Image 1 (spheres, rainbow, N blue to C red):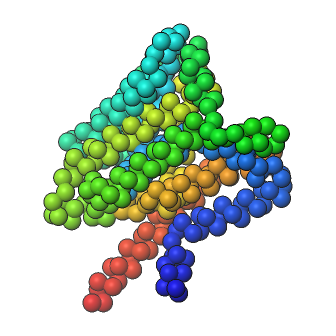
Image 2 (image 1 turned 180 degrees about the vertical axis):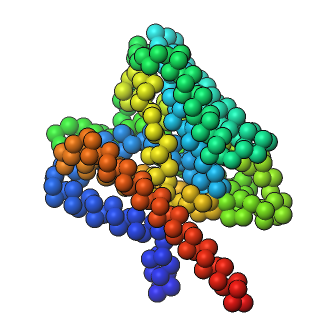
Image 3 (image 1 turned 30 degrees about the vertical axis):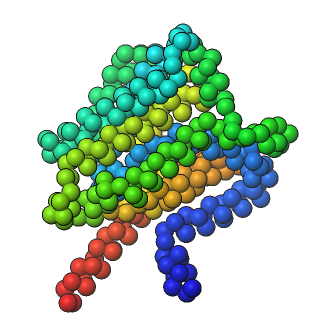
Length: 336
């Protein structure tokens, strides 16, 4: 029993969980409406977009890579989806979702091929594609909103599973939250029970060792970026279903929120570490912080300052801790 407790206390996820509990208690003291079911379901809905993208980013970070292009890819997917559906009430909902996910996957394929075949570092590749895609989207749309989405899509975005009365109105699990949990489940299955999932951890731990074991590193890396693109496409559908229209400018800097959520959940920007449960906690923690700042009536510009500090501190702490762990391993090798 003692060994189990020690194992649990060493988990990064425990610290994240405790932070969620402490912050929730503090925010509830400031505003009692925080822990109502209506508010909980609402912040799950509003953070579903970042959550879905985070489950695509998780395998990328575990492999030791990074994807800075996700903010531009989601903008592209949202715009294409908007133009496909605007004024076209006869579109098949399943076809729209599949096509937009495939578009995101294709953008991920481009990233993966450039990284593996041209041997250009992920940060350089995805920063380049981010700039090109965003410029193309803004050039094509002139930054204008796309409206006139069909009623079936509006209804799709407003769907709620279950009917629970809270704060004087009926509430339930939204379409967007359902999509987020579905993305989490699929990612968990992939990382936990597939050969590709084990290969992702192997590449992140030691690329050369993964190659010696027999993993096709290039194929796995391409798959990772395609998967991230698929999730980004799904996130685009979730996001525009909330507002019922498309704003191509709304996704700027999304990549930093997504990366910080995954790192908050225990993943490492240096690779080899991370899991779906931790990422779920990271999404919840980020949602609690954002929602708490709103309920505490913190001005918008100070909210951005706080979120920027959280991102900086989180990523810096991860890099420092990882370097310390590597230094300890080196010392052990020398002593032997």
